[in-house]
Length: 58
Image (cartoon, rainbow, N blue to C red; front, side, top):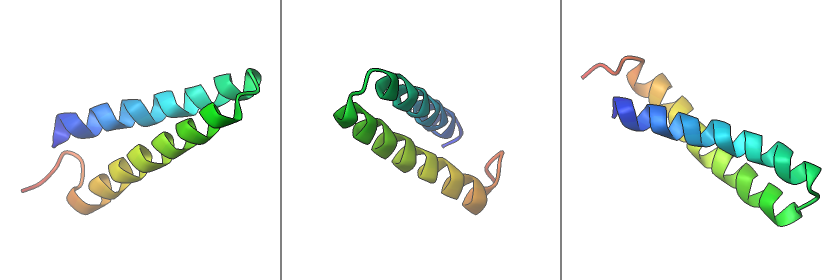
């Protein structure tokens, strides 16, 4: 779960970067999809860290 959390965190960060790039290009559909991806993956990472701690305890 530790490595998966890191990968999901990177996806969330790249989603935020994609939001700014798609705003610059004025692509509203890309803004929506990037915001959704960043929100879902970011929420998963935050809740996993709050629930299990970092590094995860068993």
